[in-house]
Length: 265
Image (cartoon, rainbow, N blue to C red; front, side, top):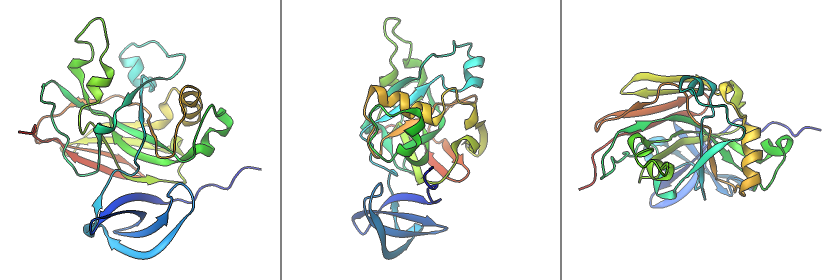
């Protein structure tokens, strides 16, 4: 018998009065819970307005996996061969960024681009899980921006610099929430640069489904609760300049918003 669908909730992590907590977003208020977001938890009875809290990354991943060439439309546009298995890299923890905070230009310079993406949030430890069981290990979904220094990637002909290009400080904004109870195949990712739509693509165009990604990646490495798999991006990726504002919007999840600021002095 199939398990009942997860209730539709929008979970977030926050800081209030110097303490870190988590809860469920209801309109403009956050209902605090305690326990384990991915396990046993219950409401505390405390309610805050969004204006009272500081949003944090929605989870604390041990790793973020980012897919390459996972959308048919972009792969066809770039004339890339259809991959036989998921092609992915790892984004490092220093790159994780909360909603609203500034993405910092790299000190070394370069063309920095946004990539609006759907993030799969793992809810139960997954090691070599089957495709049939994979969705039982998914907690929910979030918005993400897989920021990249495009001109670093192939600068050295002997080595594609994926991790460096995508691993700079602040290069992985995520949030604002983790939404549960959604069917990812019905979702659409919209990315706006300074209020103008630059990306608008259906998640159903993925080469590898959510279940396939979780199963196949778990054959390589154990996925832990809170880990995130970025599903890859599609047509419309573009460059940012200091002062730009990037938003990744997915109906049912929310809108991730981050400015692109100046390099640290």
